[in-house]
Amino acid sequence: MNILIYLVVCFFFLVLLVVGVYNGNDVTINLVFWQLGPAPIGAVIATAAVFGVAFACVIGVIDGIKIRITNRKLRRQLRRLDEEADALRLRLARYEGHSTGAVRSDEATGSEGPGSS
Image (cartoon, rainbow, N blue to C red; front, side, top):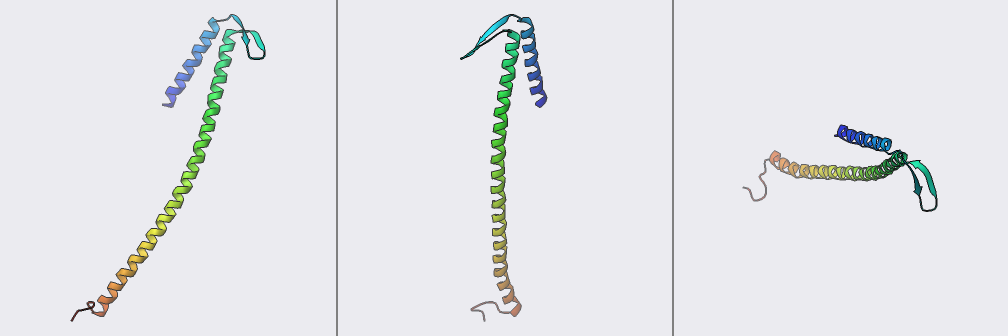
């Protein structure tokens, strides 16, 4: 799947390169408070693509950090729950051990319990 993504990205940048080469006209870029230019339209397209990829990468890194933090919290919670389940299993095993021990002691003495004659 990763190879497919790399191929699509390479194809996208190849298309941008072709569009930039065929569009060599100069343009003026009007920003809110100032103007840039004249600059070749291919350079403008390439710059916009680079800034778009960089912005997407920043969002991906931030999302990855959030996922790692959530995973760490879930691992801690899972560890706590495993420890609690182990403690409950141990307590259950001890309880069952006490109840079976009482039955075995009755069998060893030969008594069959109350009301037996």
